[in-house]
Image (cartoon, rainbow, N blue to C red):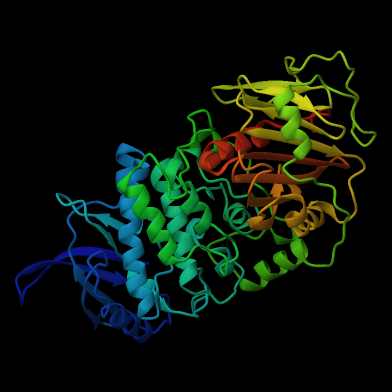
Length: 502
């Protein structure tokens, strides 16, 4: 959006940074200068100070304080990811900066590591590049038709062409926190179309390295801006993380090192847009995005409830470690009563397991990675792999033929029945997404557990249709082990292979 020059204010004898804004042919300089003057009214220690906004030969320039030090992007490129506690401190500083801007009705719209300066000597984080900021309610497309902002860090409501408010900047902050602790955005893809699809549709999988930052990032990366974590709650959680990097705001411990690394995640193929929507380039058009959304999520769907609760039967089976029983008739494969609990997965189509996991071939017709030491149990329709202490449970269910309405209808029905099937059902959401290029839905919720001794639990559940079969994979764990559960959930999904190898 511009070129920044190191300069000297000759009148006051001080070093400054001067940003020359790049304008397309025919674009007036008045609007950028007016907005820069609005931003100049923001007073906050973590917002770059704007001294003046001037025009020279029809080109607008913004004169700002000079912050000696590289950007957060420079830091990540040079030394790699930062620790969760340090990232929380940076997040707190940026949250304060954004709150000060929002109080004046100003949206930043481009919060990303390259726009965060880290002052040498003090470590002060400074949010800069307010040059493309807009007042609340402005669109995502500039007067020249160019996309305003960085797609990987842009909130889905802006991608959809909807009116965006302060919550859009908070989404970007959540993506930035992911990048700070893992080295890259979770929406990194190899094409603009892939990035768009990832932000708007794909299942969101924050990196396992978030550790105690997990709860705040999950809250900030809520696609519905009305349900997104607000600034006050985000500040509370970030303060707890910054003060004690070992425990998150909800008591969750850091995820184990056994999860996939950011590099491994980046090698997964990007999800493709529908053929009629494969237009790429720097200019996004709101009409295209709106059409894509209507095609993907429009229409009315109905379905009968196919998903149980976090599974009372599974809780019992997980404790008893009973041998595999014959599956229900809807399962795609039979399991002889004498089948071993675990066996080596077939070499064909098997996906590798992260360190600390083992790939198992289940008698009911699939393979996946589970933590070493987990025990297999079953009921009539479901398979469970449980931790040695019985607290963490991985569940898998297959339904043939796949029900009408698809995964989203199934998950919405289960969500509607959540209060009846899961005591203390709360913090629930169902999000349409994809899995291996197939339609999917992610269901996430917190509940009280089946017994007082069991305590509050959190469940991650993904349902998708593949080859005429409906697959449902979930992980449930005590809320204090939600980060661990998310790592197991990601590993199970990333390694899951149906019997057909599809």
